[in-house]
Length: 333
Picture 1 (cartoon, rainbow, N blue to C red):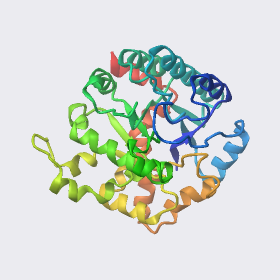
Picture 2 (cartoon, one colour; picture 1 turned 60 degrees about the vertical axis):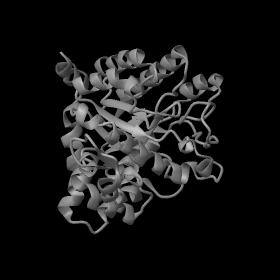
Picture 3 (cartoon, rainbow, N blue to C red; picture 1 turned 90 degrees about the vertical axis):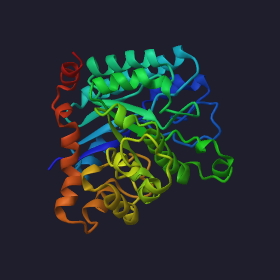
Picture 4 (cartoon, one colour; picture 1 turned 45 degrees about the vertical axis):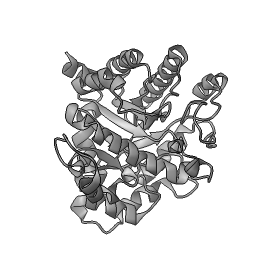
């Protein structure tokens, strides 16, 4: 069987050195203008052998890497330079290990024209299998109308978009001031961005885009009935819960069986993808344990196989065959 980890990170030293003068330091998550205190995500230099050993032990054949997302900056030039550097470094790393690693490309948002140009370069030249977007951009929703040309291009390319929290505490001191930005605010971001996309009908307007929402969708599995009953949905093409089931969700859940069962119940096993958040969970549990939470969950064997092996092949199989650029190019011409 083939288990592909859709949520893993790699932090090149060269990239960290580049963003330091931008005032971001080790903050891979957000711009310096955002309200949340910096999370201490500085990691030691990459040990590829250690990572591969952990993958082999865990039965993971491939990781899809992201730098979370290149920093979103008001100025186009540094934002574009950061995205290009990150994508170049990721492409080089993946080419050195082509059978084990792929990557999500970063985009220099909020600069739409530059983001479309970098999307094309990263996919058509660097073999990115999709793109990563932070849940919010400079503390505004990514579902806003200014991004319509980008979504149109992503839709034209049948793109996969991996979402990731930016750790901005949802701009709320009630989250940030109490030290909840990472431990709870991230899951809240996951749910809120999904609801923004639903409210703006992005999955309906751009049906060829496949979104991956991290961390089981955060709070979303518990909200579907309430959204159907209370969300202002005049003009919606379908109930909010139906749109929510168009998204995919990764299984990063810190070992919570309750979160797993809620997501399976809410979305069905067909919408879940294996993820680890490497290396963030390693102080908490081993890489093998992260996936054993799924394998040993007591779910039916066919559901476990669907989550751990089949869904990623259904979503990304064509892009995993070493011809990602050609596959995307075919769709875009």
